[in-house]
Amino acid sequence: MTRYRWVDSRRAEGFLVTLPCAVARVSSTAFYAWLAATRHGPTGRDLGEAYLVNAIITVHRGSDDTYGVPRIAAQLRHDGWVVNRKRIERLMRQYGIVGVHKARKLRTTIPAEDNPPIPDLIGRGFAPGRPDVACCGDITYIRTGEGWLYLAGAGSGLTPATGLLDGLPHAHRTRRRCPGHSRRRPRRRRRPGDLSR
Image 1: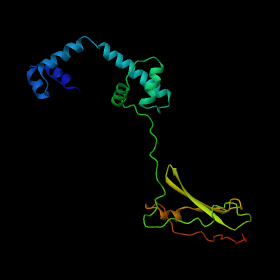
Image 2: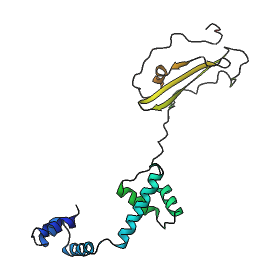
Image 3: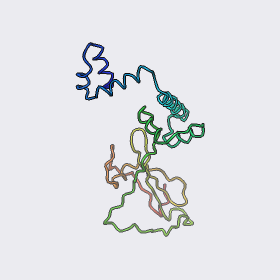
């Protein structure tokens, strides 16, 4: 309820206007100006703003609630509206219309400052020519509905898909602990030159 409506409801109860205006901290002149404007109905500006909000909601829903201020402004201009981006921003904030924002990029590899760089032991030779000469592996982070999934893969250059390892034992290298963290190692590891399966 606005202050002016509160003063108007006190006036309808029989109070003098000066006392409710003093309590609501508005001048009686401003109250009477508001009262005269409400008696005449909505102004042309109010109607234009209502039509614009309706157009903003239509464009926003047409984009599956994904468009933000820049895209809605561009679409409205394309549809023939002469409208300012700041006005659209104000109306969207006022009516709680929010677009989808890109998620902030998460930096997953945080090298320690005092460690030397890791040497390239295979010299970028990803195709060594015979099986089980060199092994390679990687770990990745996948965002799921339950949190982060740590996935690690390992294999040699020529053997296809030697298996996926549980990434949780390797996640302790990051600076944050992950829920369900286990330090259990895989039962058996393949080493270069190990031809037995």
